[in-house]
Length: 100
Image 1 (cartoon, rainbow, N blue to C red):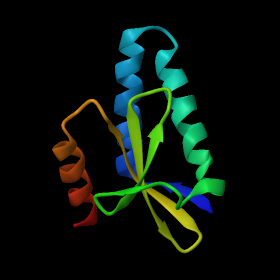
Image 2: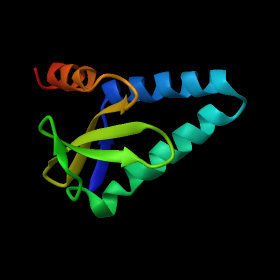
Image 3: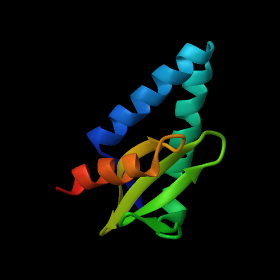
Image 4: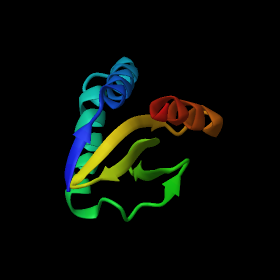
């Protein structure tokens, strides 16, 4: 399976990096490295994650973030990378915007 990150997910990653950079030097970089490692794991494990709002949801263990993706052919399309500390309705709304 080949992971493909959509622009909306890149925007989420940038926002997450910026937030963690404001918390301390190097934390934003560590955040990105951690999330990209989880995304890379989709090469082997895409499709095993539970579905939420019509998307597979991969929870990032070291940060409170979820990677929402769908499988299309041989690709795992990453739509959003959302902060789990927010209201779950925000996730539903963000993902609904993606499929419209």
